[in-house]
Image (cartoon, rainbow, N blue to C red; front, side):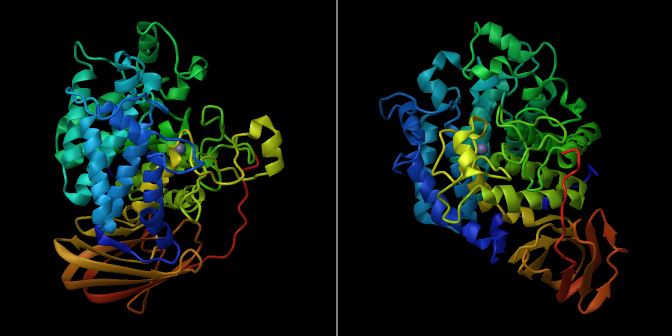
Length: 544
Ligand code: ZN
């Protein structure tokens, strides 16, 4: 299982032309990216101020002024750059690339001589650097910039941001670790763990992988780091609520290998699980993979809404307990479902088990898409199942539930996260290895890639999810023996599949939710898939 994982395809190879999804993917380029750039430059009237670009100008010494925003305000730019990278990979745009290069120049100018990048601590609290990992979000912010740097390098071949972030990662490597003289801390908000694995994949520098592993391994060890740093800095919290939050909230109550249930802040949890899945593969760590599987089971069977929403409590944006899934006061943050899809994509690629794709698809179609308007300029942060506008106005416990999508948020993690996810939809559709291609999602597209070093062109024609038929064409110029694995969704009680007009016995060839078609492909083959797709009543577990 931990031998050969599947890999997503480069976005430029996946040409999506789908009745349902194209609108959203194009929206990123046409509406969301320009809108968010204006937001970060405070040019949208009536929206919450961002000050994000101004913060970078001040940190770079180009302008005078004060820092404004949350301690993690920089991540708006990081996620925007990541979305831009994916968008440029699909659809080159010189003007947009120029703007992104300008933003990258600002980040480079705001970098300290030692490699440090963070406008809050640079401008507002230089003496506070690394003194409050629990709340300061420095490593979280670094993680998002590392992801952006990798994406921008992959999309454009330009390595300026990659060099900036590698230097930052080198500095973090020198600062944290088990070795004498280093801080034995780890992030309050996880994210850098999965980002460092991406940095390792592109640079092949193993120390980034080691650093990621260090952060995961050290979490939950005694003595409890967040108490130590609290005493060291003489007490005090940025967010007073941390005084009452337990170690479970920070997923730091024990070694992550022992975690059986999804606890605490839901976005932090699922970002960490994605990083754990990466490390399980890289280090062939079966115990780590087992922990990921247990956490998946706990979430999906006991702590997830029918929409793929997770984290049911507003207070702390968190998981609560099994079956505690209220419909009207729930939180179900958009980012949580995004992180959830990222975790499952990794598990899917490692285990080749379609159960992960089933839930990934559920989250992408529901909570992720609910987070954005059809215009691309309004957003939901909170995604309840039931809304009574009058009560949301009157009932203090429902004040977090917005009855219409908002132009922006003071804490604006969700909008740019949706942008980067929609722009990278192509990476969820297929995954490939040497002589196998897995079809995980049904989206009309034409995709070119190589199996056994020979070109294969796959095309899907479908009106899924509104119709139950997927017509696939598989084109291989030379004779090429490989496996095409088609996901048969778990909700489908019967599927009919024909290859070049001949029926395939689906049950006979099904393994962990994938129909395996292994043969010597030559020329154009036509595959017809029909899913049994009657409307079904879904009921919550009575314990809910
Ligand atoms: Zn969010």
